[in-house]
Length: 225
Image 1 (cartoon, helix red, strand yellow):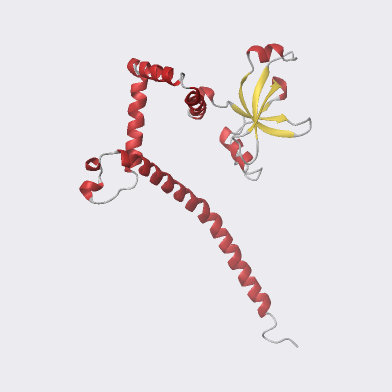
Image 2 (cartoon, one colour):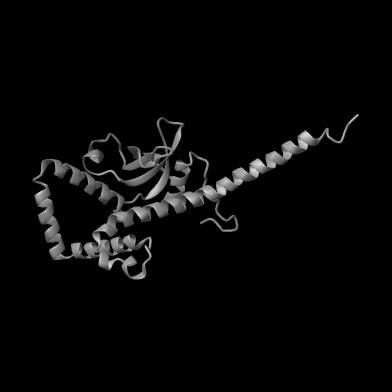
């Protein structure tokens, strides 16, 4: 004989399961937004903490309005960087930079540190001519296994001359998962590189997510070329 309390454990389990699923769904929604806001807020605070101590006290906004505005240091840093870049493009600025780099080249330890930081900065903040051209598929580390890569340039110079291939070589950066900033620089014959329609950003998301985030499919109503 069934009693009114027989189904209560099942009902309670169902309620808890729904609450747990709703909680996890809420975390998926809140976590990226919250972490992004926290990261931006922390970076702004860090820049303010570095820049504002260099600004005379009488020139700070809180001296006049009595409120410590977060982000003032970022604005000052951006304006200062723009001014430095504008000066560096001129003849006088280039002459000063060449003179300063000449002094740095005479300092053994500082020269190595400065050279490394300069190369990293030029790589990260380079113009579009140094960016990857296309996302691609290559067979790596052996035939039958496919990997996503980024086509950078066509091989030139000694690499192109001494490689035992009859056609052009393409330099392809094959990133690692989930950190796409590390990887392998490989040279493939042009016919072995399959260019993809997806953008560089979509391919990077695919690599970072370990294959979980695929680019949105194209609109089926659009005609293919």
